[in-house]
Image 1 (cartoon, rainbow, N blue to C red):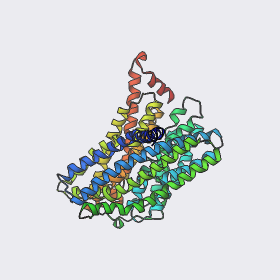
Image 2: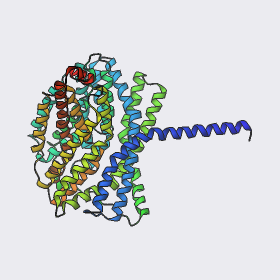
Image 3: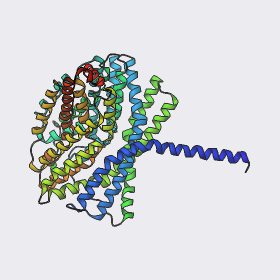
Image 4: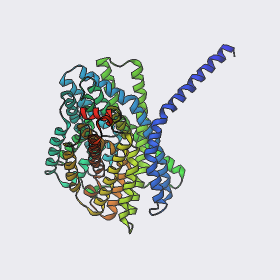
Length: 523
């Protein structure tokens, strides 16, 4: 072999190694986020399994393997979303507002809202657990709701309408419509609003909002980029309540997640392998509309450069692999153990332990949700650090812990979810009149963001298992966990805003932080 040939081969190997190192470098951050999201739950489950709620060995192996798949799948999914969804959202937002035609904003907003929601993993997990209604019926009904309200949210930015009045008007519609729907459907409807704003939709919707706001030059444009998630959470509630006029979910039709049955590790591995074709097909059907939209967008606008398109396509491949692995880990290993643990603790003499256990899980889960990091980052940028990340995290953690404690009280007592939702939303909307507008927008966005993947994949099965054990009505008592998680941050974040407002008024004029002054002026 000649000297030049050896040099060429070495150069080729070096370039290949650099590419591999580059992938691991960019994968490190999303992997760390998914690890910190799943690991607290796994550690709490292990403590429970070794103390008050023992599980069979095969179920434990399935759970641990499922946990690893969740970490890897969520990491790949997040990485792919950052590479494809965020730049596509910003490009679409800038393009549709640059053309300055309302019908284009409406048409594109509706279309992209639908197709991005269909790919949302949280929604697919919820649809699998709702009894008596086909998955596709739930998924596409929710997708239509998101599409319609994404249009409303984008037009709000363009027209500069205050978010507060839209929220008040639409929540009056929501609770008015609920009066004509069976109570069996209330919890499912509000859960649907919470799960739509997950790791797929939140980055894209917020990027779309930033892209639309970039066209405006006034001071309030940055603040108006918040509130899209809040409005997009309302659409699914309304469309699913409308479904309630046609369907009636029956708790007796619910089938608990089956504990994995394998005599050894080889059978367990084969059990996972056998599910691969099903989830590959399910994920492909969810992502194909997004790929088709990317192609159509490029053909019409010619906006994206070749390098950007390649980058987005690679991102979509990561999303495809990550979502497939995530759904396999959830359905085969994670959900069955969550359901089993809930039932085991509820059957215990001290079943009130459900309340503090759920609160501890909720406190740690929300601190590590990937979508929460996206929101906190944009909040810090828009407010120039006036709303620090640690304060946001604490407010969200306390809110979610409280909401899960209340959710478990519902499971044990059967109290109607409306006894919590009506006062919660009434207080939230009342606070919107006394806090800076941007805190209201951030709070209602946080409600959707806080109810992330771990809520639907572990806490909802946990509640369903517990409710089944105490003999409660599953559709009225167990469903609603996601809705409760989505509601309490609305109050806690706005109370945080009220605290900042009071600090600003009490502080001497020279000592008032510039960022906070600008924030209040913005609001």
